[in-house]
Image 1 (cartoon, rainbow, N blue to C red):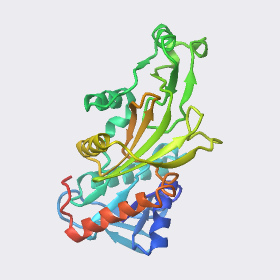
Image 2 (spheres, rainbow, N blue to C red):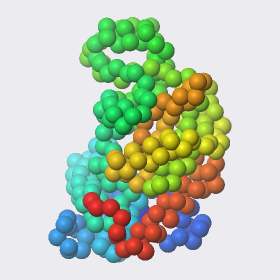
Image 3 (cartoon, rainbow, N blue to C red):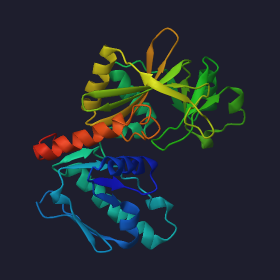
Image 4 (spheres, one colour):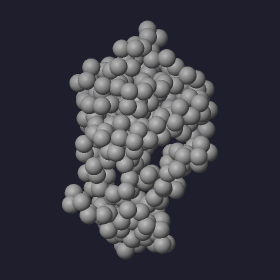
Length: 303
């Protein structure tokens, strides 16, 4: 089963792959459920949890594995009744995904520290990864001192997707405490490497781009396969497991001296742009993991 939104490119990419490969997967579109559907979800009592849309009914207890991207659109709803439905639905779905006795890729609370970048970076450093120096502050003096010491970038402080941009002391002219806090990180010059970890499988992609953020609109990076050092491969697999994740997207910068600097471990990686370069290996391994879980009848992992 796959749970997500029909406007999410990643879940759409996964479902297109499954359709092309003849893989049977039931898809629950949360936008449709919120708009015209109904749900009756039970947590931990063995009763059937049901989701209905236009006469189609899914009994959640019948599944052994689910790929979930439960993107929440509650606060984008303009009308109170719609916000209330979204809030109720997402609360129920997330609680079920967190506690269901099946394989969930990934549980909502796994890797949740990614939503607070200072905490996330401290966690990664604690696991032994090299993480660039950073500062999070709303104090103009503190920020100015930091960006005057290094070449720096400005990153999203939360888990919300945002483009990374270069920042200098001049960019802080006029900045006041009410505008903060900002999360500023030392800029590492080098190539980007995206590492997808799926269980014990590691698939790496090198991104050649002169842009500060190769994901930014209008940027056309060159992607190619990349071979990760064995010790780092083992480290990211162990760290992914430590975070309670089955699937993670790791972002590294490789400096000219060959040092791998860890920028982030994404618990809900958008992987569509990397999959073709990997000959659809990411989608294929996702399906393989879910298929094995079905064969093993929910053996992998506890909630």
